Length: 124
Figure 1 (cartoon, one colour):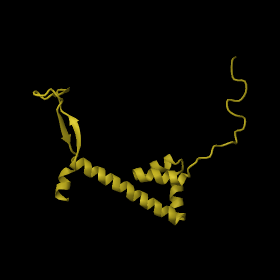
Figure 2 (cartoon, helix red, strand yellow):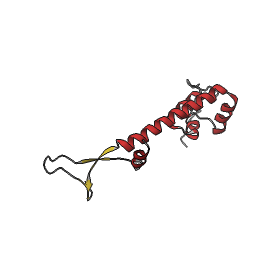
Figure 3 (spheres, one colour):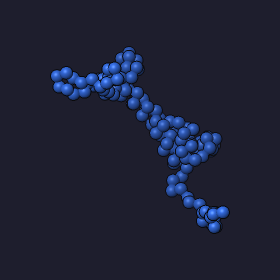
Figure 4 (cartoon, one colour):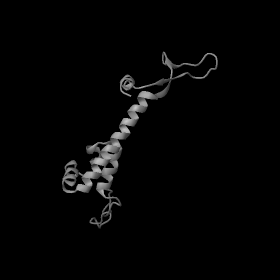
């Protein structure tokens, strides 16, 4: 029977590569982008419970956590506002086909805004 002769990996299995970034930095960086604690912990390869323990034990980490959540919230609010006011340009489609301008022959587009636009009109 054909097979490997010897170990598939280096015989020194105790050798580990050390990350160049601390798990706390990775966690905070991802939290700053998403405001999602579970996802940020997963990306940092730590247990969700661990990040809460870090938060309880380290006031500086707790402050950085709060700042990261604030930054992520600001990003989410800005994107919601952009979608409501500016929206996104989309092609006009009719019966599954792109619609062309009869005069220019160019594809028609429309600006689609999110459904929260009316809420912003009432609360500028």
